[in-house]
Length: 338
Image (tube, rainbow, N blue to C red; front, side, top):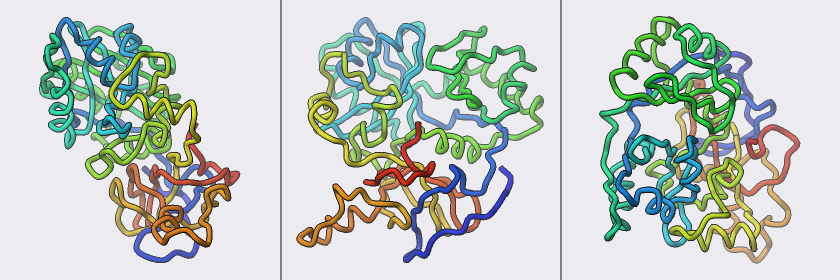
């Protein structure tokens, strides 16, 4: 990442303040790079009933994953709150569920609670697979140099030898491979790009793409719509019942989702943590949900704060974040990522 024009936040109080981005950037260019994603957790769900089991647990239609797609899929509590957000991948003998390493053990435990008599085996397999992420304008050239296809944008996977290729956006890719070919790919990327792995660049590219993450501080904090999963093809409203489905469907068909994830900048010496409530400055509050004179202090505070999904420090005085807030269209790119 290279510095561009420094950002100047509005007047603020406290250590960290969220404010609207003027040009979909906090003054830092993402550039091009790649990162080893193998520090993340990975679960394998196999067995004769694997698809039926996951169909009854996750927000995603697992038939679409089985057919060769990689999609976001949330595991919710009975109250519709997201406990784990996975990226689901198909594999020859079931499914792979990618999640933060810090949530792998709890995700495994939650899923096993529902197995009962189903013919399903769920195991931790992060040490058997390798994942890399690529981002930026040069990423396609690096893939081409390694004789890998520059696949079309979308959720459909392309198999390239041992590698499963996913294009997540115009300049973002993820590659899933068995461990040995994956390590060889990582070595090839390092040689071709001349760069070491850069997790912060990948995280910033993910923030700008509006891709959410559930971390330990935000477990059970949001329903899927607050994370824009209904707009990111992470929720199926056509499939049958799953854990938390009644709340998620009711919010979709009968209610109005008054809190949505937004791409914002923050001012602060350190990145705010997931789940942290951060004061808003320069972000318009929707008049329909603005505080009234008789509102409690807690209600007023909730409207004046954003709840961090995750944040990336990009310079000494701040960075960019995805945060769940109640706002109206400000006419800038600070609004819900497309």
